[in-house]
Structure formats: C-alpha cells, structure tokens
Length: 404
Image (cartoon, rainbow, N blue to C red; front, top):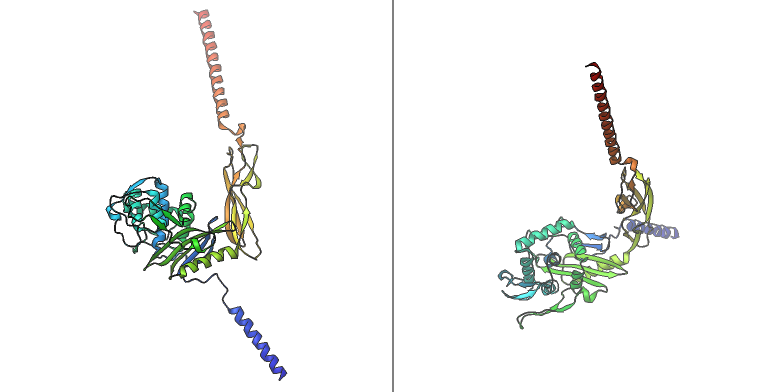
C-alpha cells in the first residue's frame, strides 16, 4: 500500500510539472481592447503590443494629429472666423455659430478637452484653407512620422471607411506631438474657461480624459469614441523619470480606463531604463587620409537608452561601423560612421560616430599648390624661351650685317 501511495504521489508530481511546462508563457497584461501598444516616450521603444498594426477606426484620437498640425502652422492668438460647415456637426461639440470669432488657442483647448468636432472643422479651414487641403496636410505629416498604416479623411475622427489608423501609428504620432510644449500644456489641462462672443455659449471645458484624475503621473493625451470605433484612448504618464505612452483601440465601456492603467503599470513595473551610452563618449582614433594630423578621435554623437525587463541580466555588445576611407579635410562633428548596439543577435539601437575636431588636409596633398607650381614653371619656361629667341634674333641680325 505504501509503495502504491508513493507511485501515485510520484505520477501526480510528474503531471503537475508537465502541465506547468506546457502552459503558455505570459506575454504581458490581459486587456479588453482589440489593439494596443505601449512605448517609451524618451526613446520610442515598444514595450508591449497587441495587434499593433491592425487598421482600425481611431475616433477622436485623430485630433492629436489635428492639434499638432495647427500648432505648427499658425499662432495661438489668431482670431478665427467660424464657417458654416463647422456648425451643427454631429457628435461632441461646443456649439459654434457661423460668423463667430474665437482664438486658435481656445479652439485647441475645446478640441482636446471637450473633443469638439465642430472646432476641428474650424481649425482645418483656417490652417488648410479647406477641410480637404487640411486632410492632405494630415496624411503628409503622418507619412513623415512613419505612420504608414494610417489614412485620415477628416480632422475629427468621425466614422469613414477611408479614415483609419493603428495603435502603433497613433503612438508615434502622440510621441511626436508630446515634444511640443504647448501641446503638452493643453492635453495636461483638466478644466479650462474659454472666451466666447455670446455670453450664453459654452465656455467651461472639462477634459474627457479621466486618467488625469485616476492615474498618478498622467499627463495626457486624448480620448475617442464612436459606435464603429469603440472606446479609444491615448494615455501618457510620467513616473521614475520615465514617460510612457499607451494606446488602446476598441475597448468596451469603462474597461478603457483599466486597460490603460494595466498597460502603463506593466511598462513602469516590468522594465528598467538602462543608459547604453552617453553623448560625446570617446570610442577610438581613426586614420584620416591626407590629414594633418593623420588621425582624429571619434566620439558618440548622441546618448542612447533602452528598457530591459527587470530582474534579468543585461548583456550588451557593440559594433563599430566606420566609413571605409576618411579623407581630409574633416570638419568637427562630422559623421564618420555608426555605433550599433545589440543584445544577443537583436539590434537595440545605434548612434552616430562623429569627429571630435577638425582635421586639415596636408599641404602636399592639396591640388592648388601643385597647380601654382606648374603655372610658375610654365611662366619661367616662357620667359626663358622669349629671352633665348631675343638673343637668337640679335645674333642673326649681327651676322647679316657682316655679310651684307
């Protein structure tokens, strides 16, 4: 009986170990949203992704792109006149009226806090001259930023079959927008009073982004919702001197807030930021052909950080890739190559390698001294020949006088 019990216990342990070994490894947090991504805003590194390149309706998260284009193409104190096509736009709005004048600054606060669809049309008309022209600006900007799986057909995110984006694309758009101080100020504002001509018009704005109240360190960015898109959110937060951006698309109801919190917690709690290299770090001396002196110190042109999973050993190797031949003259700060970093076989980033100082070309290696010398020789030969010819003519003339 004892032997039988031991056998049962043995096989029970074996089955537990087999089951544990066959269980899928955790790949990150579980969320309701259909697509999501988390990036480090400092270096753009992706920390988590779920269907990151799936094309989906972005709803009002579109207004992140609308706002940054407006900030880069007009002044906040511009007085903007409301056109007829901006009135009675469906969805969230602040009730603009045709002919009403309002500053661009107040329009942007209404756009990003109150998610005004009407303000998006006014901004588009003012900046682009028309909605269609502004849409062209949006798509050109998205392409410049690398948001290649996006196409925008309006400035507010109302449903349209040709208006789509991805979690990853919205993350890199937000990453870019958050570099603008005025944009950061707007999306981090909880409430705002704006000025309107009509004393009965809406002037009090309440930010729809509940993360600003519910999540420690939250600093933006934009909510979105339509029936077709579901609940959408771009959320940014700062903790431990790190800023993360989380994007969630097509979540359901209040799950959108929990999705964003879980994703940001995952990024902050499961990763450490490691300084891979600082800027202006000496790497090596490299030869400079025809240079005086013949070598130049090579430095890193930028700093680089990378987020590694916590409680795991960090192994980094680097690969120096200089140009095959560096010819003088060389200016200080000139790019001479790249320093590429790897963990295992995976590249984690690269920085420029630049010259520490200028290197002049040797006098003997310059073409113009040789040209001057050649010209001087030609001039001297010409002078010599002229003198010889003169003497020859003189002697010929003397000889002629003797015989005639």
